[in-house]
Amino acid sequence: MKQSQVKESSTAELQEELGKSRKEYSDLKMAHAMSPLENPLQLRKVRRSIARMATELTKRELNG
Image 1: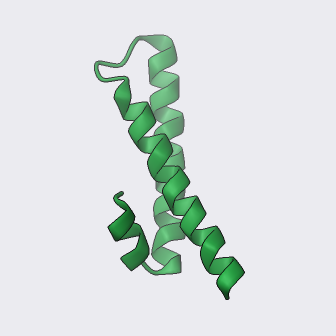
Image 2: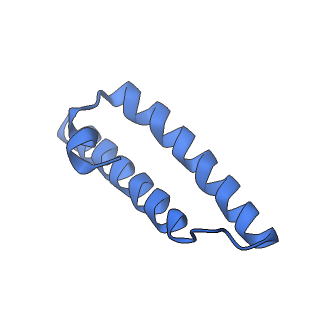
Image 3: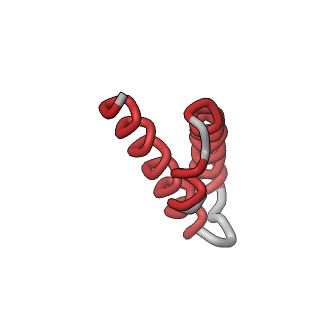
């Protein structure tokens, strides 16, 4: 998810998407451990997306 999409999303949407992304990351990591992924950069993409969403949620909590 791009930063512009993260900022436009509601808090509930972000929390839902964050849960989905964390599950996807976990599944990708498990698949990569068993046999190498065709595109291992997927892991980085998903991890950074999770970080963007978590950062935005924290920022919203602090600002009220």
